[in-house]
Image (cartoon, rainbow, N blue to C red; front, side, top):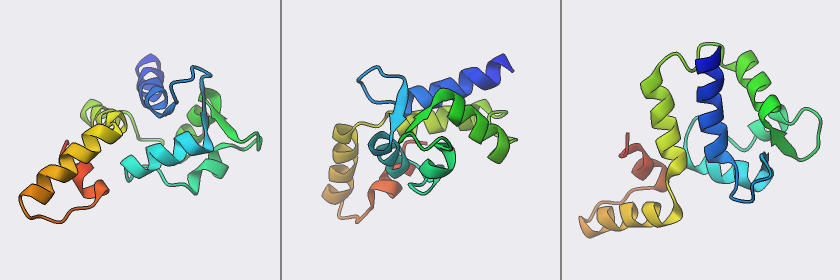
Length: 116
């Protein structure tokens, strides 16, 4: 269980903003959702069962345990998700510029897949 919670914390930490409040706001969740196909904006309300407008680590762990029971066993899968969530807007822009320079049209989601 320790490894499972460690992996969940690694993902949760990347989703949190830099304000240090240890919760994920709807806006922070949206930003994370745009970086990976693992999350979607619609999931926020499912995770925030108390309706406080933020997701706590406890909320996130409970939701993951109920909806993604087999997640976290594959360390590489966890690390790929953490890397995707780590992409900054600057990194995203640089990736898109690279593809534009090489005359390839690509979406942000497709660009993020290139870091796997």
